Image (cartoon, helix red, strand yellow):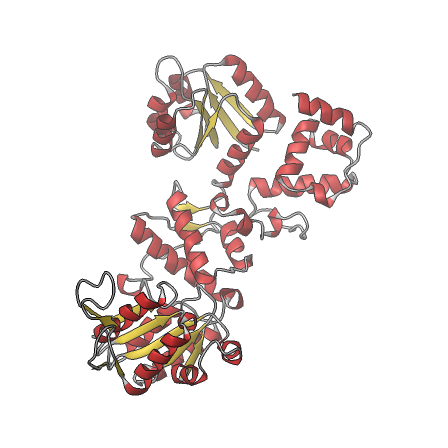
Length: 472
């Protein structure tokens, strides 16, 4: 197991925690002051340090920087009897990994220790992020090497020099605007403006004004004349995102622009022209909308001179590795971080998850992980449960892996408990004897790892034991 150093002036609390963690197989050392704890730095390399805040002499907060420096690779969990917001904030700012209030909930502390140990699961097999692989100019470009993505790149190359309208289809978050920008930047219009409009973001009256502009006094609040985005996009590209949300009235006006290259601003009398290239995008099924009469068929064909369909991320998981590198490079730049490694467990989770939110969801997960990571690696404890639980090692109803060498401590613990419960046919009393844990401890572990649904847990003393546990 692991080594835990407890630094707390409360001797009774230290003894209780020492017994608790030794019962789980950990080695435990105790110190009753910051200076005594620092004295272990030459002889001990604890994975986890549990540090009390209020102690005689130097407080835990005051000693935290020195402890961080003396135990560089240790994870630090602060504990305190004082519910002080400022102390919590300061502890996390100074590098603590977690913060637990007294009286200590052992289940909460166990979870904190487990998370801390998970964050130490880095190895030589960690995925290295090549910080030189993506220059600043390529941070917002498309990434992918699957056949579907290669076909999209070819199509972009073919249509870029053409003035033809393009309709980009695909689920939300697949990167439709990136395709539109790639077409624009690959065309002769690259030096012109790229103007984007979200057709679902504004009510019809404001959307019409946004697209075509308005004259002063055209409606309440129109105190000045405004140039529309179709005018602003002259010699460039206008991107109409979520075009399927347009009302039938706005569809008619857009059709006129596509057919005649002209429009009239709101409240205006003079026709204006535009040479902007139109690229539209939607996540709806246009054929169904046309059949139901919700979208004009003639406009549909005008928009879809060329169609580019982007497959969902779950259909091109081979691209996840390259996407992760690109997105992490971007996240590091935006947040001024240097997270350069991804643990094997994390990459496995990213590959196994189905990504209903597509690339946008992947980006959000990685940005959050970079923001929350205290070090230069993204470990499994930083992932949302819905993603982490896709790894077989974390899910009891999936086949257990034979090779445990790359699994975290938490994953191995779950597998072992699962095996013991299977071997005892769910008999909690026998399982406790084999595992060397108390009944309350086993109950917490079963709940933590969601194992109870897998077994008909039986024990002639269950009711009595459960009552005793509830009274503890």
